[in-house]
Image (cartoon, rainbow, N blue to C red; front, side):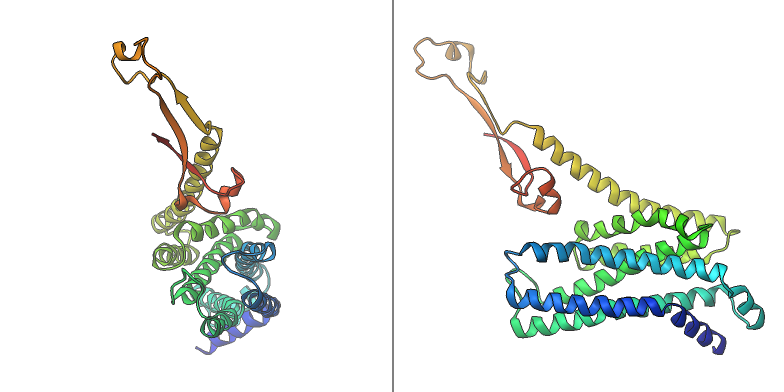
Length: 303
């Protein structure tokens, strides 16, 4: 335990810059969220609010990935071997120390923000359409998402030859963040992220000789990331397909009635069939603005 505590202290000291950044980011976000809560209508958010809601999660996930990458890469290249030679440390203890430090950094960034959000929630009251547990769901969901991105960076740092080569996998962090939009905050997101975090840590822990375990956990990680990518790929393709469809179609005569009625010369107006575009509110999202100015997708409806 003494060796582990010394290792944790070393990890905290080595990552003090991340604690400083986490405290600064948390303070800025607290000021921004407080000003928004006091001056902005959540049902009609301003451009400033929208930009903040988009950039904040991206910043947290990219920062978490960079933390894992720097921890693994620096510990592999700077002095850990010497420390292990004089103290009874194992690779599992090193990983545990890294994980504890990462959890502290993430809680430093998101914990005060969650506390301030809960206080504002109690004093100002919940906005319309928001459940009471929304603040805690957002805190747990964002913490797990950030930790999942950290695990990706940790594994990249263990395998990267240089720090810059480890940044090549940085795009995986925003992909994992897109899961929040798919599942929303709450138990559906937690059910996916918890196994992802567990197998990611297991992948960082197993040695190269455990090929069967490594293959299974790597397959699960790839499955989750590919499923998210395929979902949004299909989502974008659906939007592009709908955008290329005509807004309305009218066919007259429709051809649905018998020929003698359709060709009746005494008919004042022939039968007709029409198709239009109907709104589907469940597709309302930021992605919708890529295809139509109204921000919604549509579905073909035959009238």
